Length: 202
Image (cartoon, rainbow, N blue to C red; front, side, top):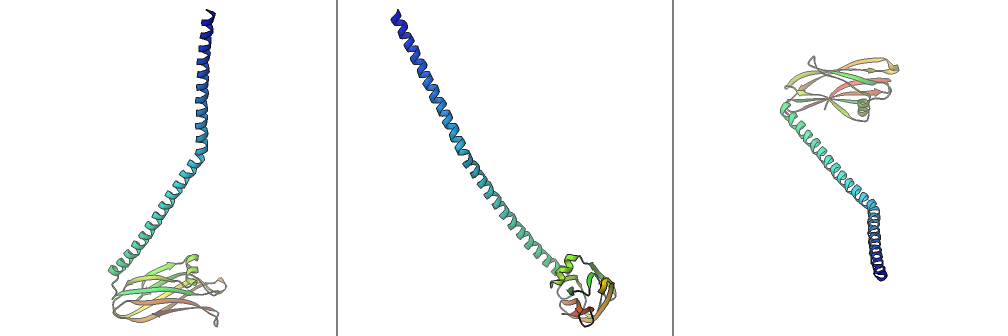
């Protein structure tokens, strides 16, 4: 009887030992898997971020390409619109140029064609700076029939010593077949120490 009890105890002990070893092995496996996840996680995050960065870069390139396409399309549409609305034979352009320093600060221009106001424009500081750097502003584009015409321009701004300054200049010209270009030029006169205004044909 004692021998049988001893055998039962040994068998039960062996079973418990096996269960303990199995539980220990399972726990070790779970800990190992957890460690692998901990070790792999930073790489996964880095890879995900890299994929997201590549996707954002590709999207940005697509957007830039689309913007360039839209700009090119708008330019082509403007050219087509000008060709339709202002045929080359009757087209008439008026530009403003600025070459001034201390004698005049341009604020606005009014343009009259054959004694009729066709356009007027007020300039911002940024636009004046662009003109002073050599830019030209197309202040008017329209149709004009062949023949004799008179163009008058009135310039408003601040003259020497900050005084309000308003001057006018005019040009009589002949419009023939084909486009016509006229420039409203503003420049400093060092000799006279004041601005000069002129209207001239191209």
